[in-house]
View (spheres, rainbow, N blue to C red):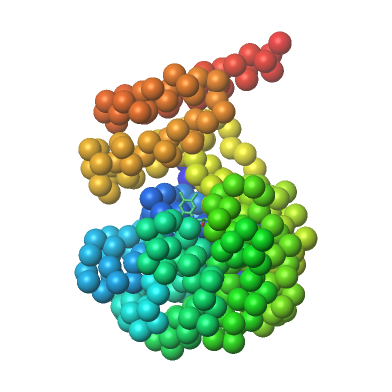
Length: 335
Ligand SMILES: Cc1cc2nc3c(=O)[nH]c(=O)nc-3n(C[C@H](O)[C@H](O)[C@H](O)COP(=O)(O)O)c2cc1C
């Protein structure tokens, strides 16, 4: 059964390039995870907008398989395509290409947050946090080349102790960007420690209503979404890891086990439809393990999910673990 859209927040929607971002909630870009199928499922649970996995600007222009990452399913929430690179002209050309190739997207997003060594050593992703003048030139060039709004995603700084969020917010606003997402961690932190929401607040304070600011980092449910908005004054929130194996995080309710199982199965079946069983089973491993995380039979089910014998065996294991949990819950309620 397809769930009814419900949002964790109800307030005046943000608008980006004519697209309403209902609820002000977004799915974060996550390489290898947030493909068209995951974005579709999150949208069905009320996610207001999604950002694609990052795509290399150079790769796009050379016609590499990066183009596959631009695949979009009907019914997805408004989508921003995220590009990364360090040369303003290459980034501008890539933005132009994406705008032509995917005319219905709502924005071009620029990645200035990726901490991966192979990206940073090329001066791309979060390396640009160490070079704000170049970061600004990239934003300006992409804004000029793009007929869609340009959005930007940063971390709060590169080194432990850095905080360039407010300065970067002013720069990207002055270069014509429409929205800035601040992940409250430094590159050196990776994903460790706690996200510093104060950096998000400082960015918002620096630009006021002249730039949409989105808070990101450690938002895991409606309560933390509201807390982040209240503490920072940000205009919306972006959720990443908490949506893996739980696209319902965007809804203000936790579905029962039957529904969760049905969503996991549908996720798998849609991936099989897209890429075939041989590729879909290994691809879905991380997702399926996340869907069953915390359930009592998860450890046993994980074995089968990892073996990936065939789709039907995997689906049977899913049904097993969820129905066992449901039976135990019913038992507890009876006694
Ligand atoms: C597996 C994974 C892949 C990611 N890929 C990207 C990416 O392609 N582009 C990007 O801007 N951020 C990427 N991120 C960072 C997330 O978008 C987000 O900023 C981060 O996970 C913090 O938010 P969270 O606490 O809600 O997960 C990735 C994170 C994870 C865990």
